[in-house]
Amino acid sequence: MSKKNLSRTVIEGGRSKSNKWDRRYSHQETRAREKNFLTEVKGDLENYYEYDIEPTRHVYKGFTDKLGPMYRWLESQLGKPWNDVRSEVTKTFDTRTTAGRHIVYDHLLSSVEVTPDVYRLKYLRKTDDPNTSYFKNDFFVNEEGILCKRRYVRRHEKIVHINTNQLVNWLNGRVVGYAGKKLFWFVPTGKNQWACKYGGNGYYYGSRVLQYYYLYDEPIYLRNEDGSPVLNQWGKAIITDYETKWRAATPVLRQDRRLNEKELAYWNSLPEHYRTKVMEYSPNYVAPEKPNNYYYY
Image 1 (cartoon, rainbow, N blue to C red):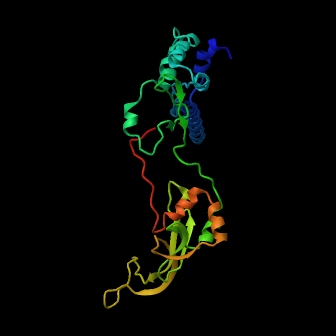
Image 2 (tube, rainbow, N blue to C red; image 1 turned 90 degrees about the vertical axis):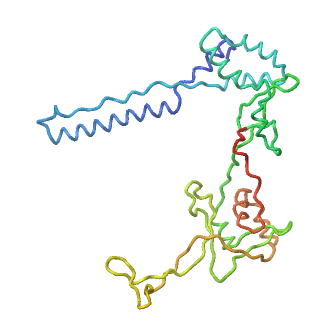
Image 3 (cartoon, rainbow, N blue to C red; image 1 turned 120 degrees about the vertical axis):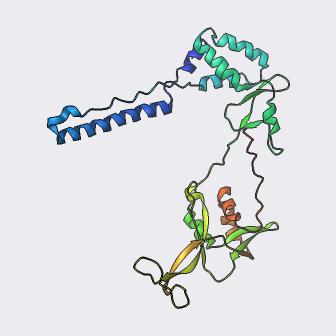
């Protein structure tokens, strides 16, 4: 690819994904209206002229830019003085054209942090590395005037999925946690039978939520025709039978024995995400520092 065509290559990205979806959906709406029109006309052929089809909803064009070539060009300039790179920009990109001005001033130069961002440094946590970023293409100029790039880190950890049924069977209603520097079992107190499973009531997290349940006897009441319970002479509802059910709850735990070598080996083979979900129920668990809501890098 010739450098003189770089600005043209970058801006030729075609329509954006959302615009393509909206265009396809508008045609689906039209086809649905056509089917309804044909169904109505078949049922009333004599008055077919009274029916009509709404025109296709207009969708304006929305384009996107292919910025990969531009970012690769910036990466090829890493380690060079920013003044030299800045002068090279005007030679590589023709800012006399609309495409060149758009790429240079709206994307390329705005991707490079020339002066330190005071707002970003203000909300930077002490434990954060200032040379990391949640964006894959985050360039900056250091104190010596050299073009650098921040190391990309994930905003959320990548989940490695495992067989959760095997994990909950291994836990058997218990919890693993630390007591000092050693791992111990923590078991629920009381006489209720406890179990756990992945899924729970997690609407947004699905199978990533660990939930504990205990077995209890739910009373079955004698009811009137309107559904209200029948009361005895003391004003209490009459119980006819009991139904065994599982109820979600957080168990009250007590410390049990240490994990043996076989159990410890299985525990260490689990991804960190699943170990954290289990240990969150342990009484000695210390939650990590919550991220600053204003921290956006």
